[in-house]
Length: 210
Image: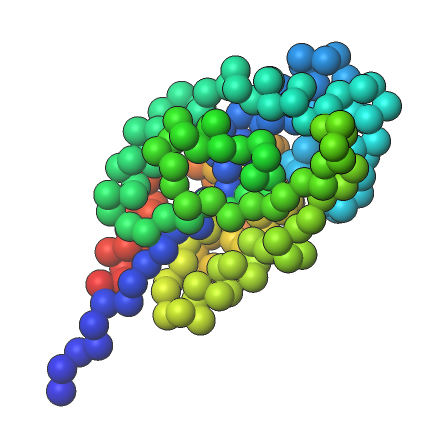
């Protein structure tokens, strides 16, 4: 009897904090708005977090174009581009993010335009952000599950509360540069801080599928 063929692998990665700076923190620093420094590392409720952000930017007269100007000045994290290039040479990669199409493309251009699934903003004719549309609620979890239904073995890695559902659903999951409180709450998960260690863990996952 012939053995079963190796199962195809796919890696799902969070973006901000893993490959790029946190966009909202950069906006907070640019405009001096402390409340915008709160991210998904701090707040598990994404709807509440985004409602708070939109209220803050609108009360301070910050439009989409202002945020896009800040994003245009950002670069991927040191080593992220080389890491992603090497990873994509070994395995299929999809980026799963709770950022927005209107924000992320300048940073994706610098990373070689990998596939990214994210959300969209609602913007009025004056460039005021009035709301957002999720691709679907809890999209990271459902994306991983859908890839599994396509018969992929999935490894997921991220750094925040909004990554935990995809990490738990995946066939293997890792934290990367997660804050101390997330590491403590999920001490069952391996947490890497260097791209080389993350790449080695992903390579071991790939080899285990052969």
